[in-house]
Amino acid sequence: MVLKMTIQNDAGKILLFIYDSYANDRDYVSPEKLLEITKWDGNRIDRAIQYLKDINAIDIIFNLGDVNGLRNFLLEKVTPIGIGMIENKHKFKRSFGFEVNIGLNPSVKLSWGVSEK
Image (cartoon, rainbow, N blue to C red; front, side, top):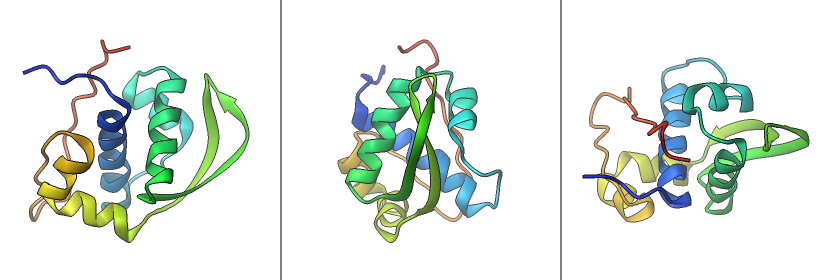
């Protein structure tokens, strides 16, 4: 099954990555890190990040400048709303259009679909 690329779907993948980093005390999520990990165009990531901010899944501050179309930002945290979306598989599927089951292991393996542009 091939998932259709949408802002909503992209936002779900980005939120999972942010959550995984946040929950497991991994490296700080930065614009450069997202560009490196996803291999996506900066504008594509920017739209997904804005969507997550608009639905209050993340607290983020946008700064001046951009990196390849992705606005510079300071990610403050995944909000309780974002955590609730991730940790409830039915809510996550309704919100982002694909299933994920975090269960007792908050470490997430993602397929970024690098060939999608």
